[in-house]
Image (cartoon, protein in one colour):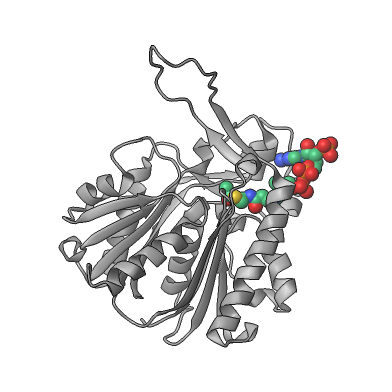
Length: 317
Ligand code: ACO
């Protein structure tokens, strides 16, 4: 596959660290030092499906196509207001496409999983132009009176259109079940037969454990892919890493002995936007003219599961 179009949409509400100080026992200095986040974009009046549809239309336009040309939609999403139908199905209707759709939930690694699935579908000849959209509202999973979690997240939607080509050099997906470490649980409707105890609870995260696992697993994925592609760290133009925490990004940069110019970031003004963080950043770089034909980009993400996904692509636009 190769990427032929990108698009993104951020919610309009900006929430600065100072604004959080008004209702939480926190401060700008703590948040910036521990996470690198200065502000985040948070859903208020918008609906996630509308952000996702707008980002998708931008990517389709950027690809020089129309929604009628899209023959498969994969949406990476963890939560939205609909349990069913899938978000991809709603996006399909909103943009006026007519094709099969599926959602994938691999938490923050979802965009890479979706790209990998798109590549398989293109290779099998079952599709020609695939829309891959990651739309996330993790701010709706956390307890906003819990200072350890709500300061971390932001919302948004990023999309790409992929078609047949030689742009994906290699990819790697892993899953290691670690449910206790990071989860968000909601009860379903009661029935007359349910006897087990069930509780809804906002997101729980063991931050230190996730931090350690994220640095180790992302470093391992990067090492594996560089070796598989026969590349050295400095052959990569940009490392587009999941934007969870600047300290995680800096730890990986140190480990690779590369300066921070290889590691563009948006976590400082978007927060952690889950699987949307990588396509949001990719679109920003593309629209700012920072990507040239032939550039090699390594994308690496980690998330609840614990899942990881990484790939090296060559920019072919
Ligand atoms: N403001 C002020 N103080 C705070 C805040 C806050 N917002 N949050 C926590 N604290 C306090 C704690 O209560 C604790 O106080 P105590 O020592 O009196 O008990 C102190 O700060 C230190 O808290 P820690 O949790 O030990 O802080 P740590 O340095 O581990 O940083 C953090 C926490 C930022 C969450 C870090 O562990 C981290 O980034 N982990 C990785 C998280 C991550 O990457 N998640 C995303 C992956 S999966 C996904 O994207 C869904």
